[in-house]
Image (cartoon, rainbow, N blue to C red; front, side, top):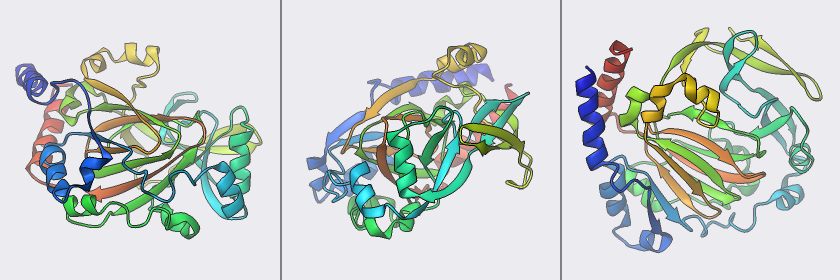
Length: 317
């Protein structure tokens, strides 16, 4: 088994990870009439990430969306905000044992949310991160994004399944995970820092099973954690236990060191194509604003091979 996984590691090193960097193109290349075909052939079909520099500067939102703009435009609007004491919504936390902990979801006015960004409180981290095509909850500003990218819809052969709006605190961190979506991620203001790992490095990305819990905000800056049997159909979830920002966590999973990690910054106005099943960990600048388009992945032969790799990894534990 180890010999087979070693072959995969070295073959992907030769054919996928040379040079060891994420490709970049300028937005001018996306203006070509053949860009959708080029994008699909060179990146989507090969499951390779891409940064498009200045890729979303054509959106009306670029240069417009900001804390001040939202104060004027959306001040009294009721929104759903993920609130945690540590910034990890949907992540691992230890409270008399390790749990996968969901955030408390609070309804508040946009003005209150923006105030938490301008005047951060200890042990109280807010993040707009509801992943249910929540841009539709903001009809006042969704026109600033328009219909997204025609080339992406042509390349994937369908309209996006979800369009999500993200805005939050510097302390808000998205723990390492993967999604069954093709992801077009647009940074409107600020920047996002990603750590990316190819799905071919799954053998070096640990998973553990955790009971599910949820943060509960019991006072202005105090939280309790309650076990959440009502949130999911299952009482447990498999999640990645390692935090690439925490040395103690890294030392606890030495095999994770072998996973090839791409550390990138997606700047204001840039677009990241994040292929399906790529592991990613995300941080951001304070008050960063982003929008992403999720397209359903193709469950083709690549997915079948990935499922086989999952089973091999289970047998190799």
